[in-house]
Length: 391
Image (cartoon, rainbow, N blue to C red; front, side):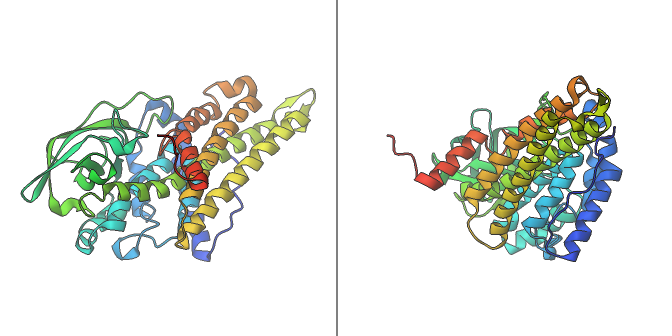
């Protein structure tokens, strides 16, 4: 069996242009990404050539302004592109989501001069970005980050360590959150740091359970000097910029999760229709039929949830609560569906001869990145009941 084997998802898309776009994405995914996914993940190969292809095809800047090289696509469409890419290979889908996250600050808060200078290369010039918020001792509590940004004339000097950085060491630019003032969220400022900045270095990539082709590494800032012209937004506005980016990024993770889940269902269904026991395809047995039905229902519900949040965003309405719900539900769905897919394949599902064991390992990280699912529950509860009142 191949890594991706069944019919395209029946999607509701707003325009003929968006339908053509999804057809192009699926063609690229099936021809250039899926056939190499298993071998390259096993070898830990980062597919930089695929990201160049996606950039050349106009797929790295889809939700951004075409005046700066973007695709002018609504989030409703962009997220379905991510889902298709993640179904072929999560390293690619998640990588595009992270790149978009890294562009978000400059696109939303940069000056016109900054946008004109940097965004064309970031969105369609072959560059690849990364997003630097987490630190070794500051993960879920992002407001407590300690990487320093000290003003020195017309420059800033950055010192500290960032952790769990997707594309760490291979990115061409980093959106970096650093402490420029006092404690708490109001003392944080955002910067656009080139990947070849003097004093910037990456540790060896983390040895992960899954997504072995996607480098995740610590970044060390040893007196990295950045001109003030690369400061994004106002001094002290960095945490606001970070939260806005994370709301959008959570939807990217949700879409990727549904892509992984859909790929697992595709594999499980193909196997169940082909595998015979007691003279019948195992898909004839009610226990497996019900399992497949539950998997498909969860996927459809997750897709509807992330698309509802995306349409709110596209309409300019608040979507933070729905983004947290989508991230929570879709990533839990990916974990449940991939686990069930392994069960459908039985012993074969536990081997590397079939892709479902890889999909199961990859699904786990989606419950952790862009805010753990425990954090998502806190976000949702605050929207429902207000801030916690305990002293």
